[in-house]
Length: 195
Image 1: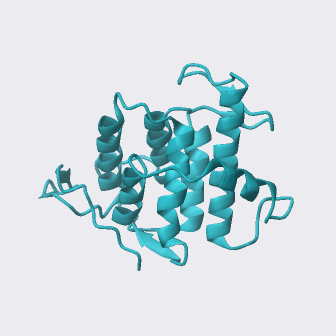
Image 2: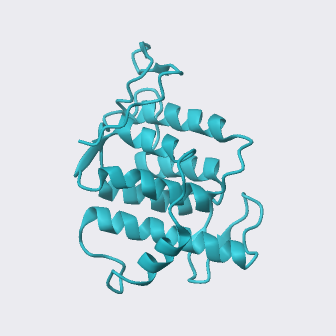
């Protein structure tokens, strides 16, 4: 598997039993703590969501042939995309305009995830160029009619986690340990639309 070495060792993860583990992201609760950490890492940063998603596309390609990856690897992908170089915009435009059927699907879970993120990158670029991206808390609409509720990196990540993995109250569901490409695609959709 394409395991990424984690850079989350700098913050504690408190498990439901009160134990602290400095590096393991084993449950959706741990994942939320990691997302909160990413939000603080991004505060004040200038990377916009279009650039972030372009970088995430490049980072995630390491896992293209994996059916599943750990929550820790998924969180690390999201963290790495805060700093990784963005994929060339020309490549994004070419892939969005070709290679997929009318529904944007090849049936391959990774390809479906990739088509979703490529369309999101294209939407954000088009909205930016048209001057349609307002304040981060405003709802935006792409020229294709797609609703965008979260257009900043911190909002996108927080809403993606909440919309994909649900709540994490004490005693709540904490059993998510692996992520597949379908779940990763749900994460992208929740990032865009979950409120």
